[in-house]
Length: 251
Image 1: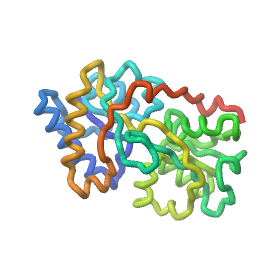
Image 2 (image 1 turned 90 degrees about the vertical axis):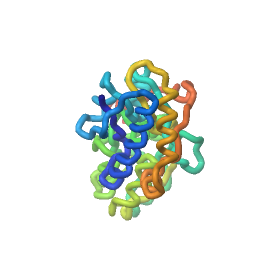
Image 3 (image 1 turned 90 degrees about the horizontal axis):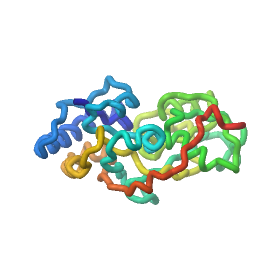
């Protein structure tokens, strides 16, 4: 058995994720669903999504649409109560260095883009769709993580990056690089990080277990994670055109 909540699992959120998992695990077991004692942090998150023994995982909507739709069962989208977006959705923020004169995407033609992954909706897919027909993007550095993308911009190795709203909230507490960047554009990103399980099963008991766990989470852990609920979005919410790979974008 395998469970992982990898998408916002950082040093500062690890204990809160562990507390959340204990609640989810116990709720699942009471519903007759076997669940591992602990979250796994050793398995690569993409490999984890494909595991046949996945009990609960968390996936970005771009890899879900591109590779895993039809392979896993979607339980529901994380709701972080982000202002100005529907429940279960999130947005992404376009950042540049604080002293950069750019005031929006239109000012960023030719800027070197740092992106966490070509399979990231917030770091790549949403920006590509937003920029299409407006500004030619120049994907330059694949960093592997939003925090690394922010550091690349702050340190001058890249000129812009897109960071999802939940990660940006976490980095505001943890990263000194935040003082060296500014947000110049808010870009729609779509369904939030989505809870999944392996195979084709009834998602209802999983959704109930996660919902009850979120509601029972302690105040400190709730404030750390910012997670407020889980939303059963319709399938059509994920009917978003796929972005081309960064290397395939003309510039």
